[in-house]
Each structure stands twice: as structure tokens, then as C-alpha cells.
Length: 308
Image (tube, rainbow, N blue to C red):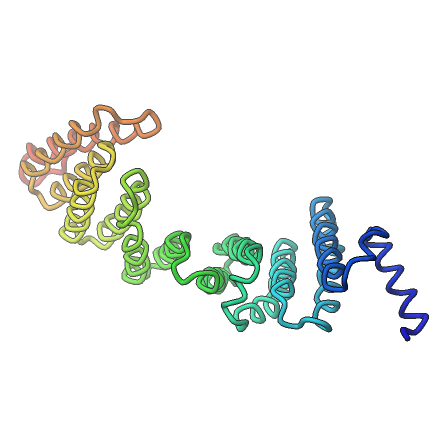
């Protein structure tokens, strides 16, 4: 027979969680399920009202309760993911670490057992991305975000975003080759996107192009944009994306003093930018500036800078 103290404690817990008398008639497994849902709802409510500490206490209680009866439950991982995310929101970076590590060593099959676990881990991954500019934990936060997304799915649809974040970090620290390597991983995925989603691919190819220009390698920059154009043409992507790509090819050629070829690409850019969406009208302004610059360089007297 259950000791009176334990019975009273159990009853108080049930009442505190709002379990009805009808629910008390359910089998133990069903009752435990209802109590788990209630705790998650209460923790959500505490977070919404700014009580992150209270939310964390509820999740810790859930982990302790479930851990005694079902230590492999995916709900334990859900609670750990939420605790880690809340610590990050409270700028308690180190306190999140043990919970993240416990998630990453769990069997990956846990994700398929509870669809909401995938959402909670993805939210945690996003929380780490907020730290990517942190001078102390920036790079490590990117690594953790990456590992969490791979834990969810080795082909996670948001992996290109993580690769971009790595690339920006490396570029900011002058590691241009590493930045390009990360972006190449992103475009390898993005090049398979349907035409209506190729904007992301063109954006990242343009980032690679800009890094090569930053390195002073305009020939490599041109080559990247020609690869980009080939994908755009094959996939029949939006004209303004092709126009932007022709513009970049023209500029790379101009920097190599191939002014006539630059002109040819600027003209193709203009043709494709005729129906440019309003939000991308700035590309037309850039094109006009590049054409003027190309003419100035082509006609400048020897020994003088363009525009003087």
C-alpha cells in the first residue's frame, strides 16, 4: 500500500497541475501523459509572462518525474532543449551547455518518436545563432547550432543558413578560403532548388564572387558568376536574377580591363532587368554606375585614374 505521505504529495501535485477527477480515473500511462502536457503548458505560460526561472523549474520537475519511470522518453530531451534555450535567452551561456551535450549524445531515433522534439531542438539551434557575433562564444555557438540541426536531420533544410553564418564569421576574420568553402556547401544544396527559390543560390554565389574580389582574384570572381548564370539559365529563374548575374560578370571583366566584353554583359543585364521588381530596383542603379565607370576606364588617358 502507498504510504500516506506519498499519496498526499501525489494528490497535491495533481491538484496543482489542474488534473480533473475524471482524469484520475485514467490508466497510469494516460494520466502521466496528461500531467506531462499540463506541465509543458504551464511552462509555456510562465515563459510568456517573463518567468523563465519558473519555466525552468517546471521542466526540471518534469525531467525528474519522467526519468524515474521512463528515462528514455523523448519528452526528457524536449525539456532539456527548452531549458537550454531559456538559459541562452537569460544570457547564461555556460548553463545551457550540459543540456545541449546530453541531447547530442542521445540516439537520433528519438527525433522520430516525438515530432515536437524536432521543433524544440530547432528552436534551440536558432537561439545559438543569436550568439554568432559574440566575441567569446561566437564560433562555438555556430558549431552547436550546426550540430543540433544535423542531429535533427543530416539534410536539414536550414543548413545553408548555418553555412552562411560560418562563412560570414570566417570572412570577418580574414579567412577567405574557409569562408568560400562554407558557401560552396550552401550553394551545392541551393542549386537544386526550384526556380522560384533560386534567389538564395544567387545570393550566396554573389557572396563567393565578392570574396574573390576582396582577394583581388577577378578571374575567379568571373568564373563563379558564369557558373551561377548557367544554373539560372538552365532552371529558367527570374530575369532579374540573371540580370544581376550579368551585371557581376561585366564588373569582373571590367576589373580585368576587358571593357568591350564588360559592355556586352552590361547590355544583357539591362535587358533582363527591364521587368525588375520594385524591391530590387537598386540593381538598375548599380548597373548605371557600372556602365559609367566602364566608359571612364576605357576612355581615360594613359597614366590617369578614371574620373580625373
